[in-house]
Length: 302
Image 1 (spheres, rainbow, N blue to C red):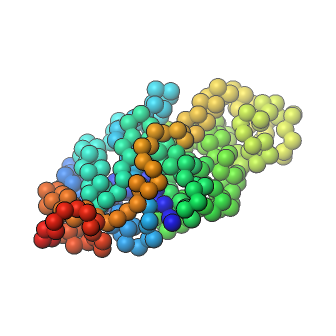
Image 2: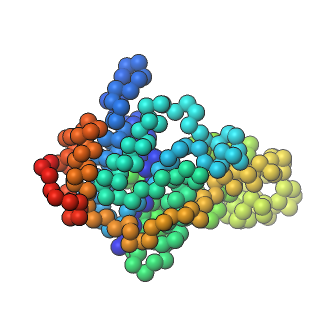
Image 3: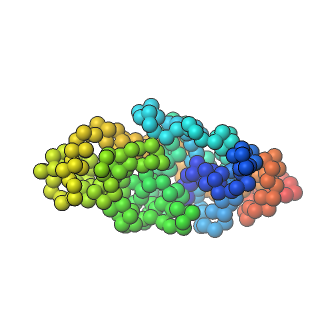
């Protein structure tokens, strides 16, 4: 069986910014539920096109998490469009109407839930593969062989363990250290000055972690251009880089209540879904589902 783990926050953002109908000329919302409509459409496409046996979608119910308490510069909801933020509750409701388990994160982030699930079930005897649907670089740290992979649905690309090493120059276990050094603008992580992808990959492929990289360039056992400056900057940012690594390390202990069998996708909840489509103003999506859940009560006209 294949388990699909979807970054719902990313999909909602993608739907919001991809459809011009969500915005009027003055930047105000043209459709108060346009992003939800796009989210529903893309999830239905996933369910139709992929061999989905088991599925869960994780959302950042609030953008802030425990990481904001650790670092003031971490990503937050500041500056986000209000009309997008207002659609998060309905996005989760709409996803549940599709018969999909929803993980609504408050203390943790959506990526933490996805990482927890991937690690928890990757060795389950019934699991053939876990596909994490997200382009976020930090999720590469839980890729495992070809059993746990990440999927960028926009570019139709997939990363297994060999592809992670080819792309970043380091194995999945070193991804938090890599992001701590080079930074991650999506999460507000600045990285260490002068450290780029090549220098980070070279140092980490030799030393493994930022802790093991000598702060004195004379002690380096790997040839890296500009190592004196790199070592000096790393020494000056010693405490910061350890914090950045903590921020980029995904939690694997999110308290998910479900057992694996609870994630089985049995079809769209027909009555719940059709009511939602009508209420949110996109009844044309009522004919999109290709499978209806048999346990959703008496069938009503669609």
